[in-house]
Image 1 (cartoon, one colour):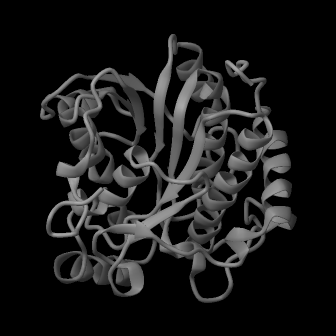
Image 2 (image 1 turned 90 degrees about the horizontal axis):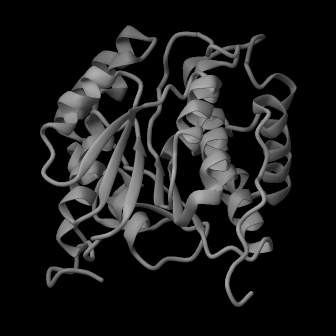
Length: 305
């Protein structure tokens, strides 16, 4: 569905009254833009945030039905607590939160911070909530999954303890997001579940994400790019929103339709060969289960199946 101009935007979101969504990393950037659009269409949106004070301040700016709950994706105990506190159905989970190109650091469980937050935290959260999810899971990846140098999953050293690089770590985590989506959809289909797993990327969106780059020169270049090249956060959130509400096949990947997928209206986009490899996707899933202690759950029986 599109507007008369042919470019999909938030006005094309169907009525979402009666639906409930969780958006991680929801207090700023792409997250708050996603919350605003979903709540504006009638969704009850839970802002899953690490800092409750900042989350409440963000929620106060949103028109619609919202609430704030604490979630620290860099702490598996927090992930488990969030999931254990969830009651009732959940129509939509948006795995949006992330960190980018940061100095070397580890999560509370000892994982490399970008892989641990961007992938493992969301992996655990999704599987713990999956028995409650009724419609879809949308995971935000990045064009960085195909950075020069052939990004791959470093199974021999997933935490990159022997050769850490901020961009290398970020690219691995974003590739992991796409492989996770691919294998999640395979498992959902095999289980006969109607739930769909999709992925999206924002192109270049001006958010606070770039401000934590480990390299001072890159931070400066990012500031220039944010000013002259990037879309704003609302435009950057459109691929996520499109994936969240439109009738799309499972495992679809949505991004901007402009040159280089940097900006533009949401559309189906391609992914790298590495992000399309089912063997690697299954291997990553198995390793992620071992690292988090969270496995694909037994799902509710589907009526008529």
